[in-house]
Amino acid sequence: MGRLIESTFVTIDGVISSPEVWGVPYWDEEHNAYSQRLLADADALLLGRETYEGFAEAWPSRSGDEYSDRINAMPKYVASRTLREATWNSTILEGDVGEAVAALKLETPGNLLKFGTGELDRTLIEHGLVDEFHLWLFPVVAGTGQRILDGLDVTHLTLSNTTRFGSGIIVLTYTPK
Image (cartoon, rainbow, N blue to C red; front, side):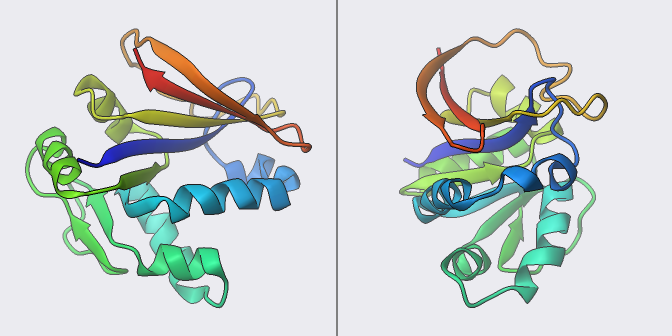
């Protein structure tokens, strides 16, 4: 059975939107190496519609490095109620997303890696489908923007690991209690 791993960039004040604005100064070799390990350990990606559309616009034009080649080649599963067609080696999940992801976890021998946080995460957490959270805490206060997991009921987690980068990023790895 596969494991679902959530990877999300977040500011100190809980903002997850626009990491391309506030996160770039911190992306360095340590950041890249950690990202590469997460991707290398995954068998497929799980994405919500917004993340999928952004990634599908950006990644297919990149190649020639290990990360780009890996992300472009791996299977992708997209949760969306509005998307009717997917390209970029992707499959749109049909029906109830909780049931679809539970079935996908049963079919996947290794890790499903999920990028982007939003409505899909609420469903995944409510159904107990996330096995591990990698919250990349950036030393930035954004001030405004979409906050991580707004509207979710109280959910308790156990800190299982911390990884500190010289840039000031700390990856907090949590598992459900």
